[in-house]
Image (tube, one colour):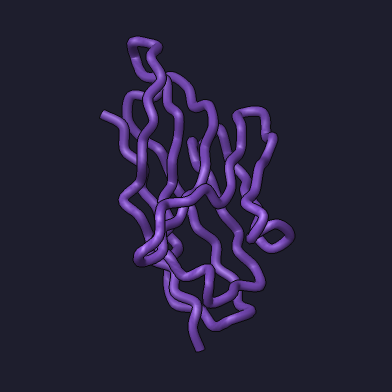
Length: 120
């Protein structure tokens, strides 16, 4: 069994910062791409940021220059540092990871989601 557990969401004022963490655990033989998605009420889930196993990153245009993504491969953990937060960043944030399991097949796994609310 593989699990992704997220932490770090909460309520923050506009202009503030939050750091999200997502730790993968279970029968993991390797992790390829990891990323963060978000879904606001009434909207589709969208990619926020992604990072390959080699550290190449990709960001949504709306968060470039404000968010950074990083990972600790030894801890099977991905982070999302969010700075200069805006009310439009309010959403449930989901972690995603492409994980190789015992059969060497790669599956996509999702975390349970963590709420980020940006409001004064």
